[in-house]
Length: 386
Image (cartoon, rainbow, N blue to C red; front, top):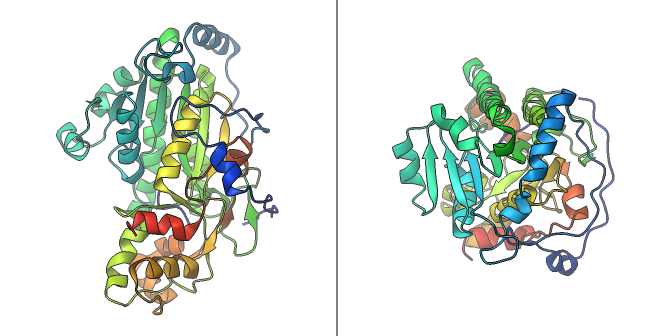
């Protein structure tokens, strides 16, 4: 199953790493911007694009004079806290971005919302203290002086595809990302953000019912994989300005307010729930709160660089996911939705839910990220308040 944030045939299979015990991961957990990890950075999966030497040297000298993002976001009163940190976010009104904005605001961060919708609408959707809002024309002003930029914008993929929608799926992602990279490059060297955390998706790898994918696995050959490759390449151009770039290949996000669970709930409440398609397709998922914490850690930990799989360590089948939802609300998962019905409804877009892949978060785990919700049943119960 492809990510609802964005998604993916030659592929290379990679064996899954040995599972990390929950207690060990929890002990290494970072739950705020102030904590750090101590493990060494594994090899970077993504290759940076070449950059002009003079410009890179200029950016490096300027960044050396600025405090690190980790220092900038330390708690008030600590020896590292010299000023209020600032993070600019695109996609802040979406399923993940809204939770991220709330989390950062609660930590005292100056959150700069870069919106493509009218500012009044964005403010109504994000009623938190500590947020400032910028229309598209003012994005360069918001980016200048920010410690970090988080890029989550893009047209939702789980919809019926037409030729126009397919163009917009790509253009919405590349357009926003190219604007951000240009804004970063245009900043004076001493006001340039130190890191860009940019969304991608597990759709990068294409689909398989048997292979396991880590960050070193090659990209797939379908349209969703093409979108992800071009999206990532656009973000990586920020490295030419001396900006650290982190790419989060996100799986299916579990949250009550949107995504796959929100679409399933009404059907299950009517006792008509069941797997989509065969039920055998693999679902690489992540609880929204874990994804938010991974974004936070990627922004403040200078060792995060390149591509990371933002998925829980335990992929499941679609049948398992549906059974977990049914069990959590006391409803059966017995009535599958056949492939042809989904294809009739979504057209080519049905591949988002009818295909899947086993994607493993090797790099995040090796760098000490601890998933609070690594077990599907526990994650679903928390999402549904059970």
